[in-house]
Image 1 (tube, rainbow, N blue to C red):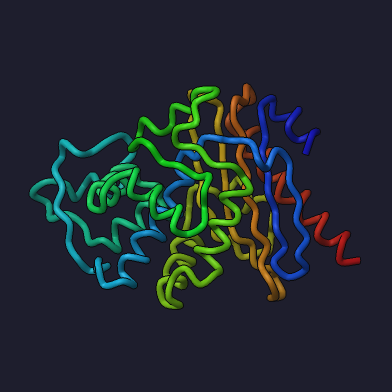
Image 2 (image 1 turned 180 degrees about the vertical axis):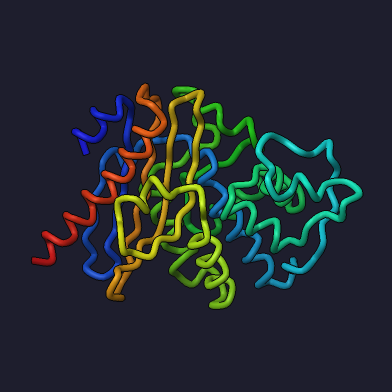
Length: 263
C-alpha cells in the first residue's frame, strides 16, 4: 500500500475484508476521506429501506424541473421539466450505475436531504460517515474539511450491512446488488484489478482535488464468500489514468494477500 500510495502521489486509504476467512487488511483505514459519489451507494440503499417500510415505491414517478439539473445528468437531464420525469427506481439506477448527479439530488430532496441520510446511517450503526451537501458541492474535498467524508473502514462496514447483510429485505438487497454490478464508471478501477471476478462497485471522482475512489463487493470466479474493498485516493498529483491504475493495483494486492493467506 505504501508503494501504491507513493506512485499515486497522494493520500491513499484502504479497507478490505474477506467475508469467508475473516481476513481484514487496512491502510489509513481510520482516516477521513471525501466520499464524492461513493455516497450514492448508501443513498440508494436508504431509498430501498424506505420501500421496504412502505414509505416509498420504486414505480412512483417523480417530476423535477430543468432548474434542478446540475453537471453530469445523463439520464435525468433528458427527462426534466415537461418531459415526464423518472420513476424512483429509474432515479436510483441512474444514481448508482451511471453516477447521475441530478438523480441523486432529486432523491435526497424527496426524503429530507443530506442530514436525513446521515441520520439514517447512524441508525444503521455508522457513526462516522456524514453527508452535508448536495451535488456538486460535496466534491470540493478541501483538506481538513470533515463535511461529506467517511473513513475506508466505516464505509466498508456500512457496505457490508447494506449490500450483504440484513438491513434490506432480500428483494431490495438483490436490487441494490444489481445496480452495483451494472455500474459502468469503474472499469479501470477495482474491476481492472480483479479479472474474472464479479464486481459490484460505486466510484467517486473529483478532478479538482485529485480524488479517485471506488468501493465494492467482489465475488470470486468459482463462487464462495465475497470480498469487500473500500478504496479512497485524494490529493493525488498523478494523471487521472494513473489514479485509476492505483486503485486497480489495490485490488490486485488485496486479492493476492487473500490468496497467500489461504495457502
